[in-house]
Length: 70
Ligand SMILES: [Zn+2]
Image (tube, rainbow, N blue to C red; front, top):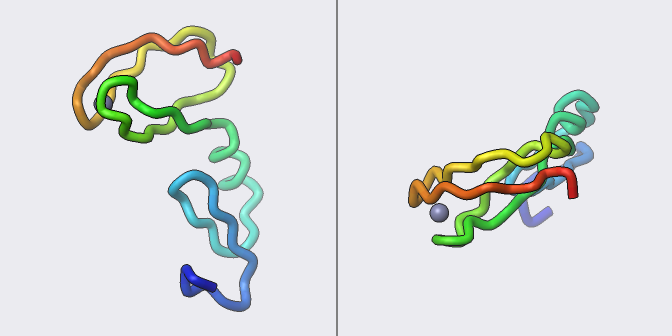
């Protein structure tokens, strides 16, 4: 309600609001998880189960390695 959505199911995953039921969209969002940049604490979404990946922060350009299999 506070998001102004009425009458349809709505999901909030991370920063994304999904109106209605769209399993493919939801699944694609659930294949990701949110992390905080170790430098500027910006939230960003990274894929799951991709092993060790290199992430570059879109805000501060910090580069770091992340184990996405956890
Ligand atoms: Zn950053």
